[in-house]
Image (cartoon, rainbow, N blue to C red; front, top):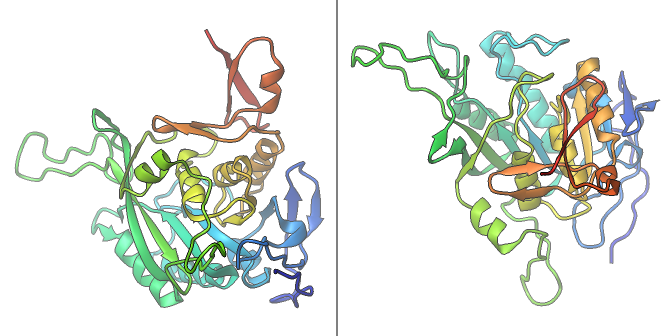
Length: 350
């Protein structure tokens, strides 16, 4: 039987910055109580910080969180290619980029529950002259920080009949090299890797009590399990909007259902426009997002403040549906827009 432990001593003093709940109210960041679930050895999360967006430097914020308060981290760090993310530079020296990565990977490991996971979407490479292998360097840095490598997933941007090559950085839809010539062709990027790590062990160690080693079932369907445990995922990329580098909501949704139970806590230390937290909310998980840029933090809060129905997956796509759309006499397909106000756009079904 699980018990509720005492309030933990903060890892450090109160951090600079504020956190805001889904409604957008801001409160000074503080240490909170850890609460264990009845079916998991992990912890529900960080008390009053649950289901909120923290505006601040992720390395500083993570250092203030209690240990072992997160079950899964899903994120996609900046690609260091000069994109406009607002507050923080996306063009730093190679060595500094990996020093920063080592710091947030180390702190993320500390706040992760035993057996918890980290899922990171990355580019294949950075730079052009020379090209530098990002998955290799990231894996090396994560292992040095103490993570255990689990799996790799290849996200193909489209389907077998309609593959989309990324524009600009990362290969580029127009990066032909020497067109139609063996002299110097360029391989265009139509995919990105998702690397999966664990803390301490491959399994969560959660058993049902029904028998020795009997695992507790998650909330996936058999069809989802069969498709998502393949190491190649086909889905379209997100169209450019207010945030220049959002990934499709189905990526965090799949990872959340694959690696967590309902009621677990999901973290995104580079939350951007809030995609990971939207998926977690819709799938009945707790969530915590960290975003350094105030404008993107406000955008995330505005969108997360909307009351959503569960996430619907299928056919390589996912959507979040606002509850108030169900009160309309006509069926509506409601999708979150990328407007600064976080409004929704609706399209009446034919």
